[in-house]
Length: 306
Image (cartoon, rainbow, N blue to C red; front, side):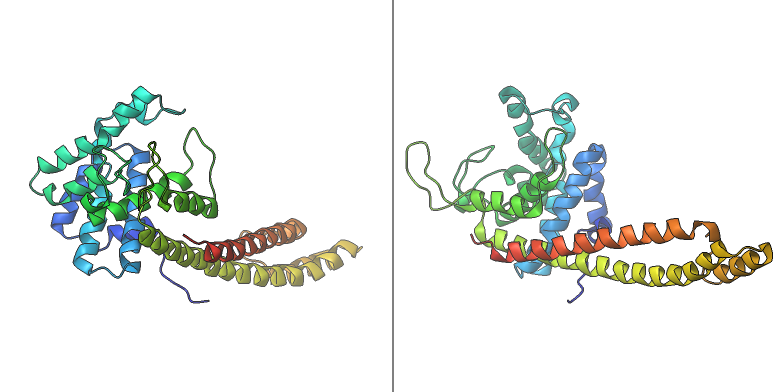
């Protein structure tokens, strides 16, 4: 399996083309709470990957990624009682929450250095079929950068564990997003040509998720190889440990104890050999089971259709 670079690592985008101008733009995020800041970083990372999979030009990739970092900047003015509420928002609270789009737009427009990125903040919750907010505009009026950010934003929102919902797996998250990309009749029975999100961008997300899952598999398989080597090492020590346990004379025990030390690393104790071996075996089993699940996850994602 080909190893790929993990762009979900928050250090990847932060180190990407961070000239003085972009550092200034990202400084605007300092007022965000920790959860929203982490969400903004996640969305920016996924947005960058989506732009790559869509084969967009590098200048647009940098622009779009910066827009993604700033997409929730308006949330710094949403009351904490709403932003950090541990349960589902009421209709009235949700109306307040929705204003983060227009607030973010105003923040960007009021700062000449942030102004080029204002559309991401304003449009990232608009839907292609006109059911989004704040203005309910349709596909032809939604900037492409906002369409990309919406997919990244929705993916992170679904897969991240929130206070009021349990974690949702990647495959189930993608299935929900497929539903959101599928056209459906409006209240008056008229079926739109579009769903809420762009299916082409969603297909790019499939590729991003597969890449990162395969990267995770490669990383875990490397650790599995390490665990197997450690188990071989401890098993060699275990042979002398058993002899030490059977020895009747103290000098024999000391001899075998010294032989055991030849296989041990610093801070490892000869008397802890059985515990160490069991811990390594349990760790190996857990990682192997996890890798099996990840392989199954990749298969399921490849079978998804929009």
